[in-house]
Every structure is written in C-alpha cells, then in structure tokens.
Amino acid sequence: TAPELIRNFCIIAHIDHGKSTLADRMLQLTGVVQSRDMRAQYLDRMDIERERGITIKSQAVRMPWALADEAGVLTPHALNMIDTPGHVDFTYEVSRSLAACEGAVLLVDAAQGIEAQTLANLYLAMENELEIIPVLNKIDLPAAQPEKYGEELAKLVGCEPEDVLKVSGKTGVGVEPLLDRIVQRVPAPTGDPNAPARAMIFDSVYDTYRGVVTYVRVIDGDLNPREKIAMMSTKATHELLEIGVSSPEPHATKGLGVGEVGYLITGVKDVRQSKVGDTVTNAAKPAATALAGYSDPKPMVFSGLYPIDGSDYPVLRDALDKLKLSDAALNYEPETSVALGFGFRVGFLGLLHLEIVRERLEREFNLELISTAPNVVYEVTMEDGTKVEVTNPSEFPGGKIKEVREPVVKATILTPSEFVGAVMELAQSKRGELQGMDYLSEERVELRYHLPLGEIVFDFFDQLKSKTRGYASLDYDTTGDQVADLVKVDILLQGEHVDAFSSIAHRDKAYSYGVMMTAKLKELIPRQQFEVPIQAAIGARVIARETIRAMRKDVLAKCYGGDISRKRKLLEKQKEGKKRMKNIGSVEVPKEAFIAALSSD
Ligand code: GDP
Ligand code: MG
Image (cartoon, rainbow, N blue to C red):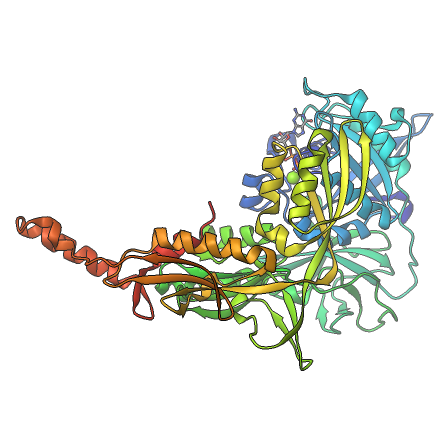
C-alpha cells in the first residue's frame, strides 16, 4: 500500500473506558472479523487479559476502510490499529506503540469523565506528536453525561466541544464517522522508500508454534521475505522466514514498505532476541543510525517467589524458564531463605506485572506459591565509596553507610474535589512532594506528585482507593532517584534472623513496621517448650518485642488414653506437620505461619 493511503493509529483510554469493545466494533465494521466469529474483546488473547479485562500485550491489526469524497467516490485506505497496553507497569511498551503511530483516538467514558490514565496516555501521545482525536464512549449508558464530559475533554485537548465525537462501542453508534475521521485527520506516514531499511519493534510475542512473532512499523526502506535482517542494538542477524500483516489473523505478504505495520518471523525462540524499541535493518545494507528511543526493560520491583511445597522447586524453575521466552522483562535468580526454603528472587516492571506472572505460574504450571513483600531497588554507598545495589532487603549491608538512594516516580492522581484533602494527607504521609494541581472542572482535580516508588508498591493504591471511595485514579512513571533516610528492620526469633521478614523502611516508619510484624508473628507461631522472644531490630538496636510463652505441647494429652486409632491418626498428623516445620535456631515454626504472615490482608 502506498504511504498516502495508510493511517496508523492507536486507542488510548483509562482502563474500562471501552477500548477493547470499540476495537471489536471496528473489526466488525471494516469486515475483517465476521459477526458470527465475533467474541468480546477479540484482541485480548491471553486468558488472564480476558478475565481481568485488561490488555497486557499490544497487537496490531490492519483494516480496510474506504472514505467517500463529496462526489461519493470511494478511496480505499489501510488502517493499522495498534493496541497499547493499558497499565502503568508497561509505560515503556505504551510509548513504543505510540511511536509507531501518527494519530491517537483518546477515548473517555461518557459516564466517568477523564481519569489519571487518560491524562498519562495523552501526555505520552503529545510527546510523540500524535494527532489526537477526542472521543466520548458509552453514550448509550443512561448515566452518560456527554455534554458535561464533552466540554471537559474539549478543554483538555484544546478543541471545540462540537469536535468531540460521541460513540458507543457497544451498540456501534458513531463508529463509522470515527473511522472516517481517522482517515481525514491522522497524517499519512512519511519515510524514505530508497533509504536502507529501518523498522521499529513495538511488540514481540512468543507463540508455541511459530516461535517469536515480532511486530514492526517500517519507517524507511522495505523488508522482504528471505532477506537477512539485523537487530541494531545487538547486531544479531536472522533470516526472515515470513513477513506479513495481521487482520487480525496472520497473512503472509511479499514485504512491508514505508509506513506499513506487520509482523516478522525469524525462527528465534526467545523474545529477548527481538526487543521492543529496537530497530530492524537489512543485514546486507544496514542503516547508519538506529531509531531513537530504545531502552532495555528494567525491573523496578523485586519479590521472592517460593513454592509452598518445597518439592515443587524444579517445576517453578522450569516454569520461569518457559515464561521468560515470552516476557522479556522477567528477571530472576535462585535464592534460599531460612524460613521459606528454595525459591527465586524475581524482578518485575511493577506490581501488576508481579501479579500477572504469579497468576500465570499458578495457573499454567499448577504451582502454589508464596511471595515476599515486594521491594524496590536501593543503591547504597558505603563510607569507603563502594556501591551496592540491593534487590533483597536481607542483603542490605551493615557497617558504615554514607547514603541510600531510592527510586522516585512522577505520579498523576485524579480525584473528585471533595477528596483533595484526604489525598494530600495520604501523599504527604507517603513522603510525597506536591508538584502541581489543576482543576479540570469544578469537581475534578489533577494532583501531580513526586513519590518514592517504595511507598507506592507498599500499599499506596489500596489506601488511595479506600480514602476516596474508589473514585481517585493513579498513574505514574519513574523519573529518577533520591537520597532518603532508610534503614533495614530485621525480625529475630530467639535472636535468629528470619530473612523473609527483613524490610527496608524510612526511619520514621521502621518502628510501626517492627510493632506490626512482631505482633503478627506472635499470633501465628505456636508455643514451644520454652519462651521465645520475637524482636524487631535496626542493626543491634531492638525497637519492638513480643514474647511467645512456653507450653508443653503433647497432642496425646487430649485423648484420655481411649481410642487407639484416633491416637494413631493424631501422631501421623503430627509427623505430617513436622515435615513442614522450619527450624529457626531451636524454634520450630510451621511453614504455614510464615506464609500467613506474608499474605497481606
Ligand atoms: P478497556 O479496559 O478500555 O479495554 O474496556 P472494555 O472494552 O473491556 O470495556 C469495559 C467495560 O465497559 C465492559 O464491561 C464493556 O462491556 C463496557 N463497555 C464498553 N463499551 C461500552 C459502551 O459503549 N456502552 C456500554 N454500555 N458499555 C460499554
Ligand atoms: Mg481492554
């Protein structure tokens, strides 16, 4: 297709504002998916995506759409819709998807109005200089307020309220005019067809049958089957076995030219060899410079993952090896814990990424897992100048520390104005620094904060929701790091460290963590034949203490000598229990107690 007839666009929206549903209607109206084959959220391929109603991985679909001029003459166009992941953990992937487009449909729920992700995605789209098409969705809802939110949206993007399109992804109302508008407003791609090939990777997906499927947008030149291609970040070369477009099922083509969007198959088996943001070029005639904006995915949140049944450890290791093939951002290394046994320290992009990985491990590999409290990465500089990167709190160094740096995010919070006070109080208690505040309308306020990521991964989101009755929304992006007064709090059982419970906390909050954790463990650890102190300590200084009183434990005492088979059963049960016991020094603790203490409630 000639570049003048191509339109590359994405739909950006806050979660649940109807992006997937609108995409479904577009597939139907353009005829690429027949109505009888239609199922809800056609593009959300993974089970977890469909169940949670979130889009984890972006996909691209090519759809034909003919635009009529005044005389009624139809000109066929090719629309490439690039579906962006809708969550903060995947900001980098969102930004690469946006970089593959010239325009963005900014979708807002007509019953909800603008939310934090609407803004965060709009800012990203503006940074990429995309043409913004403002659209109100769900106008079929009785609770829709198209006038009010239409004005809000117009004010935000700087257009007239009449220019805001009103659609329903559910009923299909207004979707045809929207497709026309995309052809009219979104600029056609430009690029040099005679230059050496340059294509940007905006997604790469592992497929059991086809290996890695790499989604690209061609900027200059062209890519053709059987050619040798090179990845510009690694210089690795591959043969192009197949090249094609998805609409939405894959169709092989004779090649991809300037402005086109499609997929490549090279037979590689690991998504790490096809990295999002990287530039693909022709190995025989390589481009001189790569496209801007490439960076390696960097894990921001770490957690220990342990099988509840220790004999599942090899299964967990194999499962992680398999997941890694389809998830370039997944990082892990083996770790052992006194309390939890053998497991892995795993790095994630964020909390949702952690949840998704854990859920996939449990669901697809039938594992039962426990994870330690998530933590961020700290950079510790010692007095002698050596630097240590700490991804596990129990490895926080002792000795003379000069400074500790922690990652910071730029957070956008949207809240109804009645909750502004509560949100500010919460942000302040989490060491937030207010950067700015805007009234989008009389009752909706945008607050911008710098906040430590460590506070966000703790429980910020839950508290924000509960303090605003679920009305506030949050989006964030990492901006850098800062020096902070952080200390390691250790938990000790009869003087022995329980590694899984060490935590890095701001000095002001160390005490409350210590009190909370010692009290929790006192509840959960059964009495022993001797007294067991539980302490929380910073270095050698104890900051909280509880005591488990001694008790002589004898399961048979309750049986009054009677029923023999009952006695045997109890003894067997006790033996069963013994297997799952962990020894911390001379204290015997059932693994379940540690698991319960780590489960948040
Ligand atoms: P996404 O998270 O932005 O992809 O949103 P979805 O497309 O998954 O939609 C979220 C929810 O809103 C689902 O329950 C949809 O059925 C519903 N929904 C989406 N579009 C419309 C619409 O136009 N009208 C109505 N009434 N509901 C809609
Ligand atoms: Mg969706």
